Length: 286
Image (cartoon, rainbow, N blue to C red):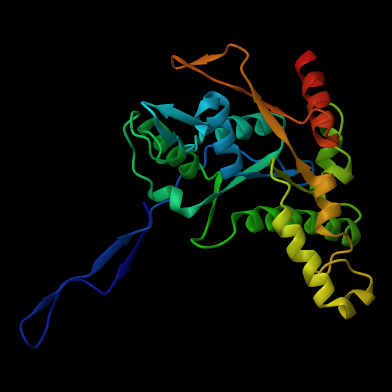
């Protein structure tokens, strides 16, 4: 095991005070249990973690979002995020050779387990453990307190698209590109689908309005032929039409650890989903 040594061996100072060297072990970083595919042949899926977790919880228990009467007392049961939905989405995309990460609020890391009978919005012990597991495996991106997690999800996905475009314009052939000819799963993902995508049922209306207001406030900037202050040619509204993937969860009778487990179902008509599903079926038939 490697270590760093600060100072020297034990020495006697003039004041008769012994000082000893200090060893600081250089421990390896936490193990990442997933292997991301090469960026040269796989898109990046950025999961809107809060959107997925809350929708999965509601799919398991639709009544959790409804107002109920209990002994003539109206009571609103707050939805409680269930990160197992994030896990299902991650497993889906990894199994189809896509890179994937999920943006979640940092505050979730500080949630304490609650009793299943409590009616607050905290997670039960199993759900907290699931979240910690996802974090330890390197799947989560923490949105700082007070920040807009939607903005982080969109920025990360669009940055990936920028990288792909930059690569296409600066390099004709890259050593990773040669690997694409040897795709084990048969069939390649078109270059137009190798950028970044956001997985969410949110239409991001606030983000779109902010960009459109910025366009009005800085209209002189757009005479240069760009559609946003980010310098991109496409507006956020246009980008989301192509790069936002909606989804649902379906109960098909699956049981996991004694509990119902919903099946993750991304929009089957989205071009990326059509592509990776076709490749997945082809690989399964080989």
